[in-house]
Length: 430
Image: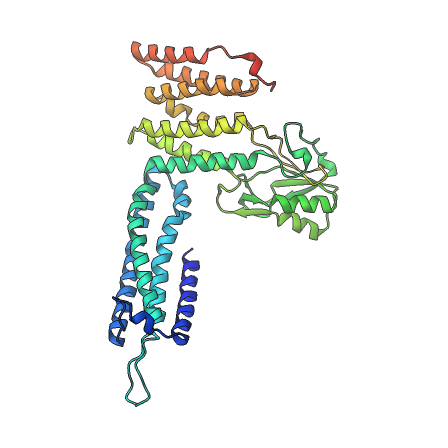
């Protein structure tokens, strides 16, 4: 964004400079408060705006680095990219740099009167007015930034932003891709491939799978009548020689194999674009740090639990299939992937937090209470069974740590909620 805003400043300078050359600026100078400027005054205005913007950009960058250092040390290093991708910070820094660049370019147009009779002073009035506009806009952006930075590192906003993105990514990862066989619960996984009949694709380097170009991969498989089984999914780590996919029929030409490999994006770290479990891990890390002895903040952990449960409920209630079948336009399954299911999501989120939550009575009671509410709203037997198993494990761990009668009594009252009867007529077979 800073690069785009800087380019926009250059374009604005060119347009306004051409207007100055081709239009009569007397009408502008007749406006009260916009009288004709002399070269020295115009140069002083542009220099003041440009130099101040460069200084403010340095201060802005320092504040951003301080906020990032605070957030990563308190909430975990994995949320660093959340701040790197923050559009507010990018827009602020880009605005200041663009204003500085515009003023530097505009200074070149201001000319003093030369010694010759034909050399006249020249002040680009419209360009100067553009510089003042850039300066006022930068002041407004600075006020916004001073509010945005504290809000961006507020733990409630951080958790809500990650939780909302987790819910969104789960919705994107849950359904199939293209074709009627990937819509609805009628879609079923294809038969597994025979290892001997398939062409193996192995990793060429150690890296994380970050993204899969679904459209291009399905297009290649349909064009060459292939069936591809991906044995890794975004977020998985591979090493040289590790199996990545199986392709039928075997004997792929090198060019087609290179095309399939080109649909897989590898990198040195995980990203949330197609890896919703990465976001779940971020919430787990924040919750675990909050319950550490040095911080002991159960309410932050409870917020993480709330957002994890919200994402799990939305994931469980969606009618779309989770078989991981990607189909072509004719409905033929072309790509099969390992799909994320509800028990795995639950265990990766709340299951990972279980040992930390069990050590804190407040967090335990809150988690058991929200799990009791969640199990009533789930439509499938398998989903309820996963909730019951997690709740029993958490309750047993908390009861082992309860040292006084009131704590045990409170846990017993919450346990009664988990035994509440369920309308079996509303259940859907697993």
